[in-house]
Length: 248
Image (cartoon, rainbow, N blue to C red; front, top):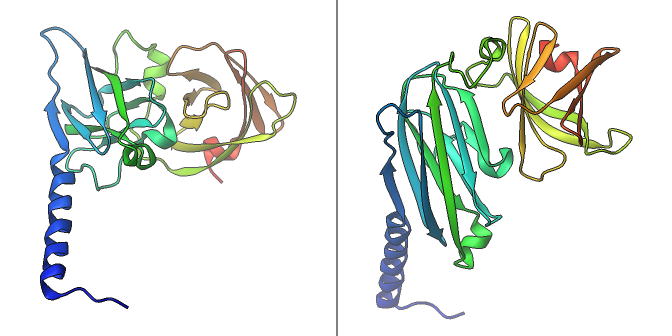
């Protein structure tokens, strides 16, 4: 076994420290500002390797925030962090799990961080990705949502997680789509992965025995025993147990 001399050991430690500082310097921060009278803004940029961009945006509790990432690079995602937290802390939205679109009623006032990053496997290969990030923030009573949907939206801090039987057009529910649910009295917000898209997210709002969704897709639903059978668009099907909506 070959041992390092003291001088070589010191050199290796210095090199490791320099690498850590280099990685830290690869994260840049930008503040998003909306034009006067506008409720949203778009930015276009790119990242390479371990580069990340942290976009800061200030909003108030109860406002609706929608974040959409557009990129042709399949390993580029974004995370959302609540005020007082950031990369390294727990995210309120994880793009690699939940998809390229975040839509929620904000739980508290402050500055939110939207981090655009590349998965480590692609970053190691020093790949590059162009992207466009769209951020919209509006009040809960904005014209972007119906009054019914506005009433059913809930600040996101989910009560339970698990899987929903789902289908991408197959005759039977042979798939399991991961989901998270936030409950309120007689209402629920369910977030699940679309069975027709590997990273697409479907957000469902339930209130007064009715369902709605965040992107306006046509929905059909009906009772089946202790479950709701629901179709979104032409190829998404879900079986939602009462226990998901009401607990128990």
